View (cartoon, rainbow, N blue to C red):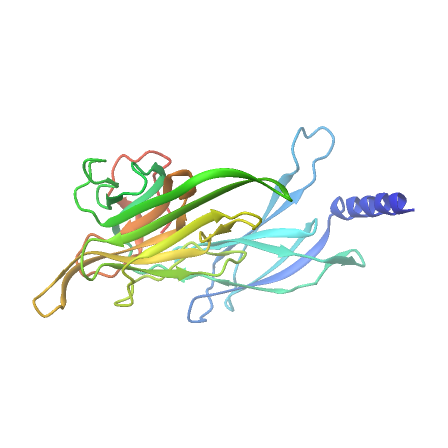
Length: 327
């Protein structure tokens, strides 16, 4: 009976997945202040299961396009298979994408919930500026256990480990010897890596900015300006596996940072010159002896604007892995 029931459930699920039914939802588009955004382009995509003769793959995408009315509303009515992808764009705004509209059941030949409201925020573009913007991709830390400077304007380690000159970030990566032990759960590999980030100047620092992971959002992830104060003098991240314990990691997908470097102060301790920037995402790969992170540095002293113009990256001739287009 158990096997028959499982097969029956699988067949029912297949019927649901392979049956395109009517779905309806209303997209409400507004800005950060709640003002409606008219004439915004609404893009919807649904996946159609492959039919015999279409070739290999899980399905093809069918698209639906519309625009918001004078109330910032766009009513979408499509046939789909239980979910729909959604993105919204308009000139002068940062696009919002990655939304998934999910339906739970079918009633009378249509998906429910019927006509739910989907709120989408479009963030207006302010004053995007040229910045030093780079995705540091799997950059090997030259020496473990030693503090090494990283030059943000050169995008490289400082000499003698690279071509950098100003040690904006002081990075120390330490690790304990890896070992394999036998536990009552079986063989277990133990490791322990710690990344310590510090700075060269009094007044430099970093501010962690965790953002909740959610389905869909603006291409402008963080604020347009770095904060005036609140910068911490160091950041410690650790990844380890202890015996008979689940693995631990301080690395978070939703973690972001503002930072301040090259700070100069007068005799009274007041800041007279400093550079601001941001890091989108966290520091990755350091448990492999490497570093992966994406940073944006405003080269104008005392200017807290961190809204990047992707057409004006101050790094030239970057490889495709290093090129950064997101704001």
